[in-house]
Length: 128
Image (cartoon, rainbow, N blue to C red; front, side, top):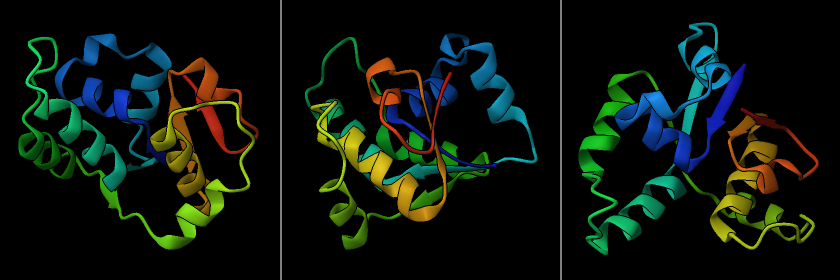
């Protein structure tokens, strides 16, 4: 399967794997799966890291390097991805999560998330 991990799962996969569900771990560790991350997720992490909150200490370049080192493929954001957001129902207010779903739809990926609200969208989503 071709899997696009949402932002939370990316952070947990690299820095807190104990927070991942058994299903998420199974998918991530299955060598038959191709793992992707969005540049939009890296942007979201960078924004949150810039606030320098003590509860969110993420070194963004290190996180990015670790994802690449672990075989994840980076997915750039294109205009066609942003156009697809227009056609999504308004179930979720987070614009970056909506963009991740649009990317999954355009690129024939399955979006993997722990977010119940995001998982309520129709489309290629797998809640773990």
